[in-house]
Amino acid sequence: MTVMAERMSRTSQMSVEEFERIAVIAAKETDDAVRFEFIGGRIGVKKVTDGDHNTIVMWLTRRCMQARSDLDLYQGQGLRVERYREGRARPDGILAPEAHFAGHGDWADPAGVLLVLEVTSYDSDTDLRDRQEKPAAYGEAGIPVYLLIDRDACTVTVHSHPDREDGGYRDTHTVKFGEKVTIPDPVGIELDTETLKNYVR
Image (cartoon, rainbow, N blue to C red):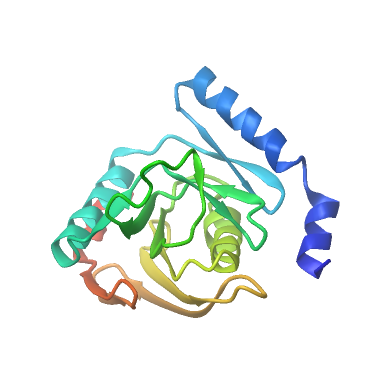
């Protein structure tokens, strides 16, 4: 058992199967007002997004469709993450080939996913969840790129070259809103982030 697996077994709140049952019940009871995630053996709550958050996701959707019409930016799809697929995450966006998730259930394997997107929310969990736990989980799962649009810091961070052994990513590049940033292969597009200045408090 690896150090990560040992740590998970000591700190996990519940099994993945128990979490999935709770997530299904919660989705029905709350009409999707909140969504649960399970990363690092802990349940996290993903709150309802605001208009600016949704606008940012749609902005990226348009940029991706213009540059790569062979790809779709999925919203609401769950992924099995972390090295042993014991985590469950619902990124704000998942960039993958067209119709990639057809026939998949709530929690899909991340194989074939090119990029995951998170847009920070104004809540107390953002630092731990989006800046620490998710890069580790997505890197362990081998997802090539993690794009973090951070509305608190007014930055865009591109995490690339996943480290499947230690978690996280080997390369990170951060730009301030207003600068251009390149999302490396396998995505291979450039974003002008000027408009993101309009969608922060």
